[in-house]
Amino acid sequence: MSRLQESLESGKFTITCEIAPPKGTDISHVMECIEVLKGKVDAVNVTDFQSAVVRSTSLVTCKILKDNGIEPVLQMTGRDRNRIAIQGELLSAGIFGIENLFAITGDHTSKGDHPQAKNVFDLDSINILKAAEYISIGKDMNHNELKGHPKFYMGAAVSPGFVPIEIQIIKMIKKIAAGAKFFQTQAVFDIETVREFRRRTKNFECKVLIGIIPLKSPGMARFLNKNIPGVDVPEYIIERMESVGKENYREEGMKIAAEFIKKLKEEKLCDGVHIMSVGAEKNIPEIIKMAGIER
Image 1 (cartoon, helix red, strand yellow):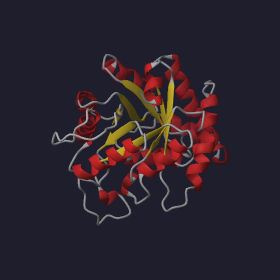
Image 2: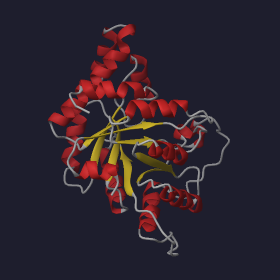
Image 3: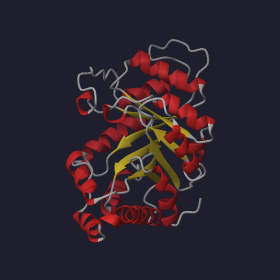
């Protein structure tokens, strides 16, 4: 059983976050993240060519995290690999002792820094989960026997703010049927959105970590509203950010995130949170402390 699974199944309010692999071979930022996050979060997702941008791989960065005492979550997209490569990557993760998998379909390559690249999409997130489920019982997707195999604790994404929410609920049910045991959500800023989402999903057999993005500026909030489907930063939050002045944006964004985490925990609306700090990992321990959570 992975440490992430142990944390979630114990009933502990679980905190995860995410980092990106380096764009190059310089791992100094990864090592800085390890120093900051160790003992403060329960697991760290490593993004997989997020936004279709070339970087080093999620797998190698997960290995670095694990070797340095951080519980890694391997993210796996379906955009860049066919089913042979996906299964090979999962087996490689097993060799490295990586036990957590987060399956996503992935953004179109037109959104990234190599828009001419071909999209693969042989498997979507649901079928990546199914592939990992096969591997977890010692078979590949064509039912061939494996000589040794990992067993993954599997997660997937859901967007509580997406309209209509019924589409997300249907996808969530399919992902659970495919083996997902936990969900890390798209960022949410409105507590009522979480309440409604949990009202609809409270009896689902899975754990839910609500996505948190600490805002860095009012402009960032407007960018999220315009460009990220399912994300809605309420106008009152944007106005609150604007009211404090540019020199206080970072601190106010951290306060807003901490207040939201505290409210989620007090109302027992979720099993934990997933903090997406967008390169500002050094702020995560302070946000946790501001939320009244001792680590």
